[in-house]
Length: 228
Image 1 (cartoon, rainbow, N blue to C red):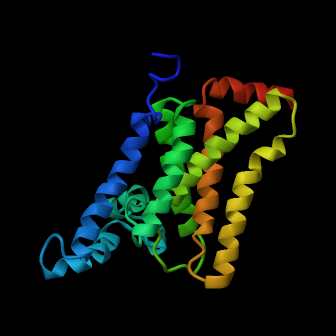
Image 2: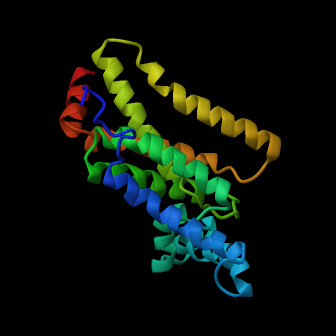
């Protein structure tokens, strides 16, 4: 067989990316099966609402824990469960595309545990930042903060490469600037909760964590500090 013709038509996804995407897919399969009457009883049409009640993160949860000084296990779990439930199929689809595209790129450079650290670091940072905004009452859900964590890692990789090439490192932030610009535009036109705050926090967490979890991470960070 000639060179190149024995290669797979699609590059396989790293297992860690399947680990992040499959729970989202499974959740959507179940919820949509209930919505369209393919599973469950007549009450199945409300499964998505029930899932949001069980897994989404209300910003008032953090307020309550801070006010009472008591740790609530269910509230804490919401900081890592909210990315696996979405408002609708389209919401989940776009989040999944981001994770597949950016996650594959990052996972080809980072170890599996580092990819998980970046994703869930973005999720937790996004949840905290969103919950700390005064006056918010709309719950946070969806995998975008974690996906933006992967965008932060992707940006770090570009940033490091541009630095090695003595090129303008600001070019690495083109993608995040474009995406946030689109979100702000849609928010201004259609309104809704300012969940871009969680996304931006997720991006920042993914970028900053990369100094530690990327290959040669801590050594690279110390090198940068010494150069300043």
